[in-house]
Amino acid sequence: TRHCLQHNLGLGGAVVVTVYRRADGQAAPAMDSAAVGEANGLGYNPAVEARGFTREQAEGVMSRRARSDWALQDTLDKVEARF
View (cartoon, rainbow, N blue to C red):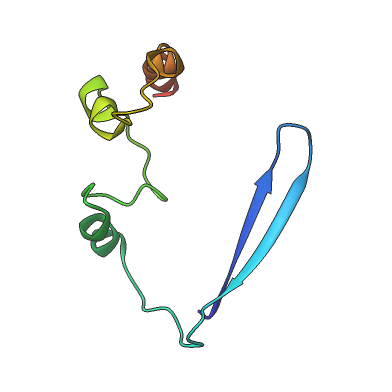
């Protein structure tokens, strides 16, 4: 495909729809879920499979300079409740 569509729903009710086009005009290469998992380093495709995360994984990607323990305080509990 040469184009993709992204839609976002804002907290205030705003809807934004964006259409992207590849800069080179070529079609995007076909990728299966296994290839996506290898490319992102997670081992799975987060667009088609939802998995939880551990506190260690979250701390591994948090900013070292602008760390906010307050922002993460109940995030893990909320994510676990959805699984």
